[in-house]
Picture 1 (cartoon, rainbow, N blue to C red):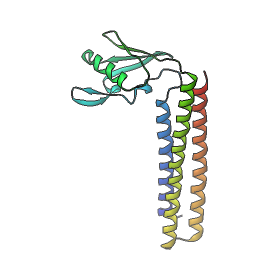
Picture 2: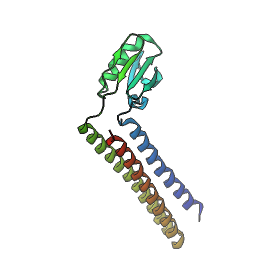
Picture 3: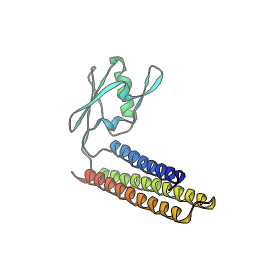
Length: 187
């Protein structure tokens, strides 16, 4: 196998792994009824004129399965953080006691669970599309190399490896998606 072919295979593998990592990051933001600091990951605040992720301005913890505690490092930012949490429209009602912000994570309704399960399936499908695109791009590259003189058997062998890689990653996406969907639908 030539270095070019191996490079294309490695690049495809990295791209497919990237799709899985992205999917897992997206799933960590989708709540399944348990409190998690990741639920606040998307929140950004105006920290003295600089838009900053909440996690870089406060300590975020979960003392139990239903509560998130946000303890700002700078107490003067507590109201700004509270407003940002409400503005993020995550369905949380933060309570500010002057020292920290306490968020009680409400239980999911059946309707909300179904919406989240639908969102999970959509994210899974997006990951599959990304993986399919990686496969398509690799196969196109192999065909270009074949036109430039790469032996046909090497090109076919490389295509088979990409197909196998594709199938493995699609199975992994299905497993991750089914696990998250089950987690959401479990009361």
